[in-house]
Image (cartoon, rainbow, N blue to C red; front, side, top):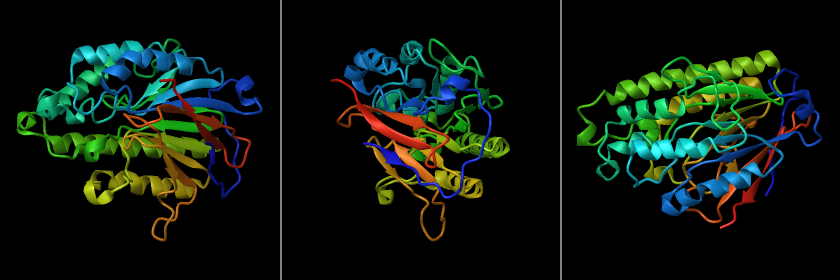
Length: 320
């Protein structure tokens, strides 16, 4: 199923790190977007087949994983992180990964090992972000990484579009209370506030770069669903500052802005800030299919900067 982002202002022109031959393709270029995978033993065992399916698409030039590399109840072990890192490096295109809550924020739970989440976050950074400024994958690409320790936040330009990841996990952006087992660890509020400041700075820098380049569009990738299907059952206060920053910067940018995330597991696309109070019609969000939702699929994001809509996409089935 394809979809379009409406455009209210003409796209500008700008530079990027993509080669001219890719820029000139009639259909632009494509990226594969996945999230909330692999979930459970069957998906872990078959993850290499999923990778091979994405590798087989000749249009794909880069892959984005939106976090949650394990299911909620699974234990947070070093061995598992190392295994997924090996799998990630089987992607033939550069892979950009932004963390989710299941691999660190929620590791305080007894069924996940009773860890201090900040210890797990440090381990996650050491396994997946050991080369700041370089993507994952068997053919890594250069990216711009934020200052330490927030090196998981990266930015790059392709097809006159600025792409940026920001570390925004579920569990209310790490404001969901830690258990007693983690209570004696580093202060949870300090972790949240320092990462939030870094995320807000990174969003500003991404939109500053897009404006300077007169980019055709901006893509922001994260894990958390900041607009969950049932807000009555989910605390979302940890996302308020991120949403406000996105609204302000997207409105001023005026050209298509796409927010990519997983977390809710079921594919969806809408304009969550299209209302009387926010009025940001050029911002669209995409939820990628993941977890144990059926059918299993990945999202192919097509970028054509010379077109009014800039972004189109379709879901690609994964063979069971």
